[in-house]
Length: 157
Image (cartoon, rainbow, N blue to C red; front, side, top):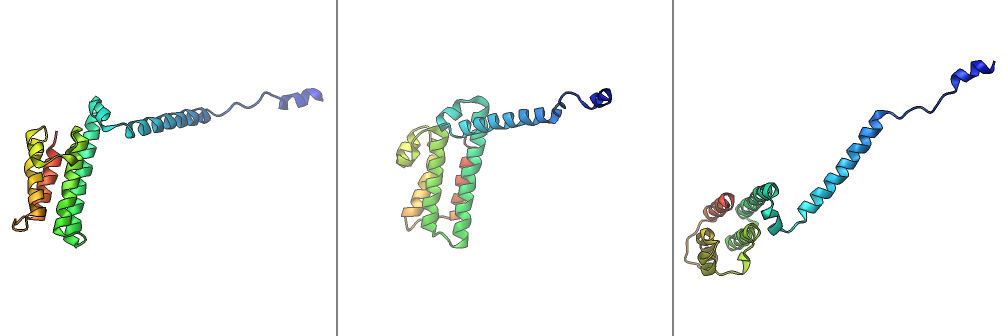
């Protein structure tokens, strides 16, 4: 009789192989999360120097700031912003983009300083935004200036 019962006794059942793959997948997800957080919080100056990440960062940054200019123009069309407010917001977005893209503190530079330095291609658009904002006799079109700023951002290398 004891021999009959021994056929029900055996070693522990092995774990299913999907537990191993689930563990590996979770480890890869955690490592990926840390990499994403590390890269996302890096200073822009270091990101610009990295070959693959720098190109991706540049494309995402151009897309983000061009979208900001487009949203400013849309807010002005809906009446949420005055023309002067739209010019100010576009100027701020463009200067912030230039600072992020080049490292030059464009927010603090006069138009003449911008025209004399590495940011010279942006000087005409910034000057037009300044003139439209502060010169009451200037006849500027907000949409045209928004398109010019957006095109400058998209074509910046």
